[in-house]
Image (cartoon, rainbow, N blue to C red; front, side, top):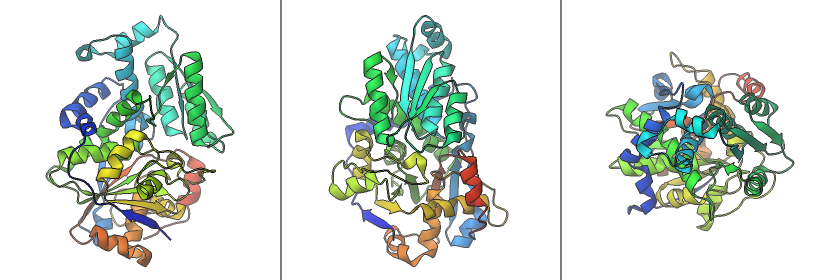
Length: 389
């Protein structure tokens, strides 16, 4: 049974939103364009599925194409590393170049370190190699062997630990403090906010691009998946700034790792403990970022805790398209928004949520598929179950 909490979002703007204005996002985009192979990712209109589900439009932003890394994470890690290292080396903000960073780094022994369920670690390893630096990545126990190998292929030292994700984060943080490594994590916490904020800003290029691609069409509803919440909060912060009427925003999490949902329930940061078991590996987090919560607890409309089956349905719907719609390869964490939309329309257990959100024939839904088939064996097993529609 899905669990949900509604929120009466505030209208006043907090100072943190100033980091997510169009002007700030333009600066982010300029740095992204310095990264080799950077390009806009597709926004797919699923017209046949929209008709099938009885809504006006369904748009899916497909981040599997991002920088050839099969996920959105390079936007955060890439921007954060370039921005932070530019300041670290004393470079002028208006004269940043990767060549200058590499040149200075070549005379120094610099290591970036992080913890990851897969995609973020690969992104940190990618940008470290791009900037001529070393990288170390810790993964939680039970991590996918394929994701582990993908990180090593980017040149990182990579280790699967015997602790959960949050334990791996603390392990990486401790190593950074003891050895002078640069800790590149998207979980903001007391005394550690600069790099997490840069990572959040990096993610805004997703919604910035989507807004441009949609032209005069404005989404009525946006479904955002949350791990530590940095991605979801960055998209939401941008929308609060840029849309006169911010789309109704739903935050989606796996029921065994629902730290944002539980924080909303308690009105403050809440740690979810235990194994955090879910097929949505990228969302398997027990502690939300403090910066993310500043945005999410104020401006989101609903928080939903979901079964893994919802993500599986989303993967299958996108892989087996309706009619002439385009096929989208979306992984477990990427497809949960689509699975949620399907359940809203077709599952009576979701009727209350559907009515509260006002999903009807005039709804324009934006879903962001944050990853592709980053675990190909799991992906194949799930989509081979066949069509949902």
